[in-house]
Image (cartoon, rainbow, N blue to C red):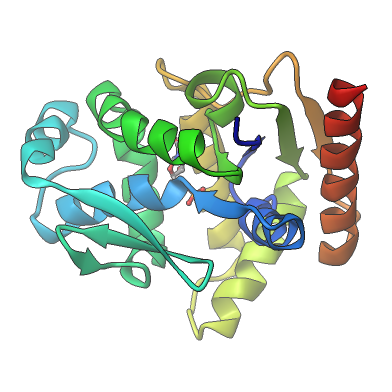
Length: 226
Ligand code: DC
């Protein structure tokens, strides 16, 4: 049976950088499930569909095929056979993803794809509901979090490096809004799994966060094998 590690947590906790590095060290694949919701959101943005209108978003699903491909261990997300890995990273795509992720039909639409990948591969899968809903039997479940200010500062620096003009205040406001959306929606809200471990990395460097997550994974797997 493949080893599945679920890493959930709010935006900007460093989930993707940490999960990607940890997966590489362990020889697992890294699956970023947020990219799937982002791809669904991008379809609506491109087609002028109001992402806050659940019925309209549900109506886009029969026209969408989302897929993940791994090239040299790097995940690429495809929307109707087009690689949209770059386009999904813009701030409007982030907000659209948060909106469409609250639509039950969207979550259902992406559920099987996530389960299939995990059933076939040793993987670290990151998202919001991986340990609670998608992979309730994952051997390791980590809830990775940090203060809103620490998370907003990381996001802000990341966007600045890409040449984006967003201010720190805008990034913080955006993140607080997304936290609220993600944890207050009716389906699969963001919350720690009861049988998981919470890691708060507010004061930790990226390297130390990776080591801490690797330690939790190794200790949890060792305890299960004992
Ligand atoms: O992790 P991210 O920022 O790329 O995720 C984009 C949005 O998708 C985020 O607002 C919450 C949502 N999401 C989700 O609801 N469930 C997941 N498993 C992953 C992401």
